[in-house]
Amino acid sequence: MADAVTGFRAERAHLVRLGTSDGVGDRLDGFLAAFTRLAPDAPLELTHAPTATRLRPVRDGELDATFVRGDWPSGGLDLTPLWTDEVVVALPATHLLAERDVVDFADLAALPVRLSSPERNRTLHDLVPACCRAAGFEPVLGKEFTNAQHTLGTLGLGRPHWTVFYRAHANLLPVSGVGFRPLHNPAPVMPTRLATAADRRLRPEVLALIEAGRTPA
Image (tube, rainbow, N blue to C red; front, side, top):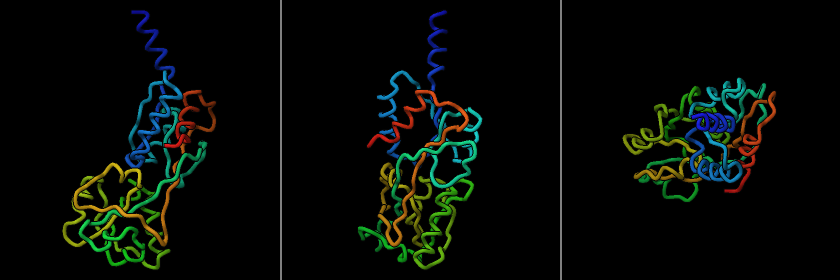
């Protein structure tokens, strides 16, 4: 019994608590594999929540680190660059634009776009309208993006519309009736960084998280 308690305490001492989200997509598998190679004895606990909800626990020490996309208040945090993801458009597979290898942003002007609320995904909520304006038009807002399954499932119903996904997320979403295409003019991308508390010395296991994110997939 004493040995079991000692083993449990030792395991908890090496536990790493990482905040994540759906948008990390197939990057997560490679990241976890790299982390396991670098820190084979460290158990990893994943917490899934919106970015704003994950940043406070990092500052308070309840999470060791979290993935962060885009610009967020960084007081009390160190932000380490990890990788950059392409942002792609999702369209009904039957739409003429889905027949192209690459979609020009300006050609989306007449179609409504489904965006998450800023509370759910402020990063993409800000990025997409900025890209539309760079392409010379104001976006036509459609229904709110709720979740990937529901939004993609109804993408081809009624009036054609579009939305966006990170390429790493889209790679895990082979949905019948939906086409994912690269964008250009502009070609949006989004950097991912790892947020850690600025006022605490990083444990070797947390340093392994940083190194895992820099390991080529």
